[in-house]
Image (cartoon, rainbow, N blue to C red; front, side):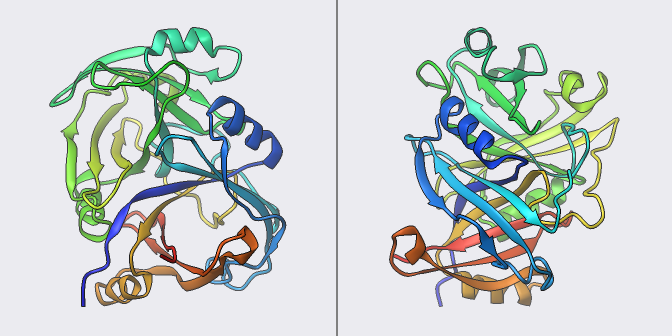
Length: 312
């Protein structure tokens, strides 16, 4: 039997306070203008994740015109949602940011100063094996971190470019690299582990002396990359106890797979923890044919990772 292929990051899930306010930001500012799905008010779609507790939420998925990571925003109504962290910091364990390409960080800040809440000044560094790299941090309406980057190696037009990667804060970079390379097919190290961001992320991490060890992984089967980073001084904060899917903040990285049922068996055989066993989604409500399947698995830090299989 052919091994299931995981084909890179498909979407990022975000728990939000106001679904329409978030829709306006990601559509009008981040240029996610193409609707992928609009769930409407949905009841009890993920009983495994909620451990059979009743739950109600609304949500949508939009993507940019270019081939980029899809944004999914969820507003949960029952049970009452809570912030994952009252104050979001760079390095918190779990999905912690998205990275967006722009032509010139400084010009972008000036042009978008009334549209994006920038919380750091533009910074520049040199990344080993990559070269020049300029970045600035802003937030979405719920305070979630968005990194805007430019480099001589990035070609993009004016305005907001491609959402190119998700950033995940981890406690042990080497261990997490091994997991995502082995179990999610992020088999190409696009940027080797480095510490070029150390001392440059104080405005978003809470300490001017923050030490960061980071890498960028690519998936040989598909598109869209994954940045893993281990933050020390201060250490990234752990996921709080009793966090539920749909609480406010970044919720998940979702990847696409060619065969979720076989992948689930492989994960169980490898001793991994499935939060949600294979669950079907009837796509008829979205005007599509067929059934999609999804699972949730925990990475070494307990971070939920969703894997979805869409019908051919």
